[in-house]
Image (cartoon, rainbow, N blue to C red; front, side, top):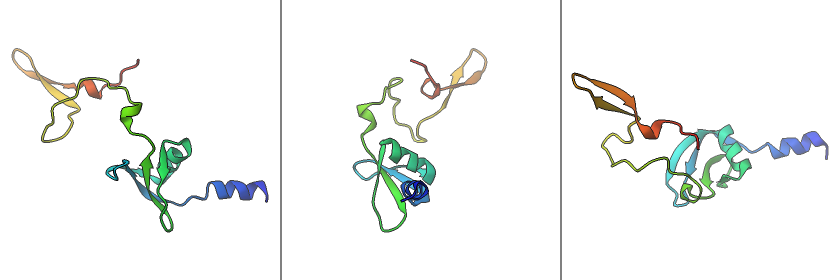
Length: 107
């Protein structure tokens, strides 16, 4: 078999344009482009879920709690979800500032 054929076979996974990322419990976390899902599978972060035809779902190999670093205390649940900004009152007015959990911190 020629090298070009082998390369074509290795990258010939047919991912749908929009692939869903699932937890181990089967809950949908988010949607990714097919190319990004293929990179996650090749890196070992996710496993492709076999279907008849194109791959339309991938499953996380391990939960984030096993390797993620918490960057701050958990916020209380809110109606609108996680806020990336917050209002800060001054003496005569108020300003908008970035929520501390939305800022990138380097460890």
